[in-house]
Length: 502
Image (cartoon, rainbow, N blue to C red; front, side, top):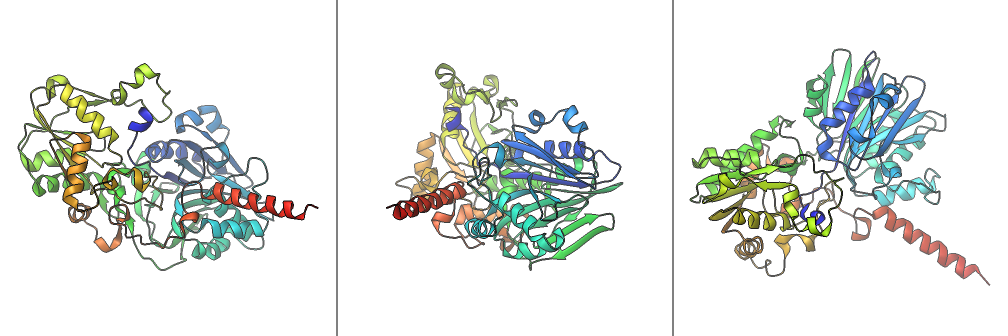
């Protein structure tokens, strides 16, 4: 059941880049990725360059599993990029791990890491295929939108610079993308015109750093300079930092970064993630109060909102659940006997704290509801008198096509049969399904207000279905869009050869 209980929205990816002559850039990238590990735990990789060649090392697993001292020591250079992956396009294979690597017609290397999801992947793939830049018939070919970007970038740099190739390519790329890429001498970073995913620039004593989150700047000792702007391309080399606009900005930052995805010690668009979550908790307490004895958070993501709820309500905050920090996504699948323990592998109640109490349990979101159902059952078994659930985001009703792997709409508990008539019925249906005494989600208005960002600059599509970037047809969407496209191409080829046979 652990697979079923693991129902929080999956993160997307983390990217990191450093240009710093005289520094150990491979090791800096390792630490930067370590700080971004929460954004993706399927694969990790680092590319380095020393002015004459680009070297890439990547593998499936956590950053600490992929790299060791010896590997990092064998990667000298002055420029590097790093990537930790959760797959939102393409399956979990070594070939799909990043950074991706392609060679230009001039024989130089281009390595690229991508956080986000494109919505015109099929169009770009078709273009790359026709230009002979990718061949998915070859064994071990990658099937990601990121690899297509890398191929087009390297292809475009055949008779010009990588920077110029990027300026020609990026205006034609649609969707959410934060890119770090490099050649033998230069670090590049780009952010889509909507700025869906965060990307920041930091300064080292002897160089520059770019990273998905400011927490990764902190860990390598870089001072925050600014957010990279939507529609901006940065090039960093011995001449300094060059900034070019490849598209006018239309900011639509992902609100879910504030709710769940980003580390609480990061800052996005000038607003502390932790501060946002605490404020959401305060607003939750104001929106629909309830009498209780103790406020507890579901660790770790529900804790700041629980603290805010306790502050506002005057009800004491307590640590009612212990989290096992070492149960990651690479956890060995339990036997049937152990599987029945379900959520206890990850969370265990502190019975002496919970027993005889009316609890308010604060969590970041409800997706399928399996985790909350198991959790509430466990709290009642530990002696809780009442369990009142408070959720730090509105009901998740829509999938994300910009870099978060949510469940499908049919799997989302807020869309379950019988919940479609009105919000009151949906709320009651979910409450019954998870077994809570009461259930309250924060209003979208309250959540947005807590971010201190104008609503017009945020993407809330997973809550309200308003997608800022136009989506293609359903067949051109989804995690396996490339695999599906290849299957269709293969079927066409098979049909053609069948027709040509006598």
